[in-house]
Image (cartoon, rainbow, N blue to C red):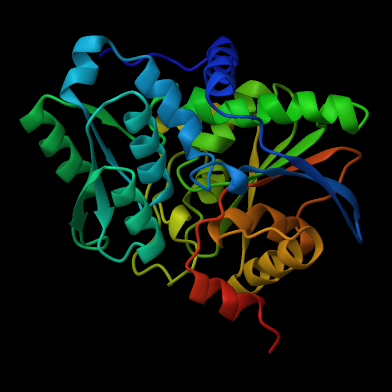
Length: 320
């Protein structure tokens, strides 16, 4: 299928598709030292992350012939669950290429949704090559986690939904947005949904390929021997021209957060809002709490996922 550019109109169509399938996720105010912020709780999606948005929009756009041959995707867990969820809803087969070290909870949840799982070594094998070979062998459609116009549009539906919620409850649309970023699908979709709104993408330290790419003006991959991180959902080694191009055109900037800052954000979300947020889903909140992003009158902050192993979560939120 010929690649096309994602559009604001596509985001609006994706929002209609998603709204017909699931209710809006909550938008919750949180008062912090810097002021009031608004949290879009994508951790409360049926699969625990925003990824079902892009997956549903992508699979819904496929022809009957394409659906009959199924889909192949690659993901550490949240996109995997999104594709598996959408495929099950549409009666399709799904095969997911997942890193062998993916969190157990994400792998089990993906398998429970009916998907076939193929594992690989994150540091020595290419998930893109493995998935492409499987798709070619089976005649299936490959559904990337962020390098796809339908996926980007689908993720942008979260921001469009949040815009309507903020207009109803915060006195107006967002005047800034802080977005968790791995490959940049959610951030790029947000840029399309909220044109002209200043965007800040947030990544874990050492995995800041989008941040560095935006500064350099060209795509820069993650460096060799990146540090370990609990933010498994954001361990993208190289962003795509599609997402980078949208964010560069939007004038987005980026910041990084430490593991300690991420853990503090998870504790705040749990103690003040009773929310379970995974490390990768808490980086945007972490950046705001750490004072790395200024709070405006109506700052939108994504909580992008909540799929974290119970033992890991208990360890993080327990007092020292």
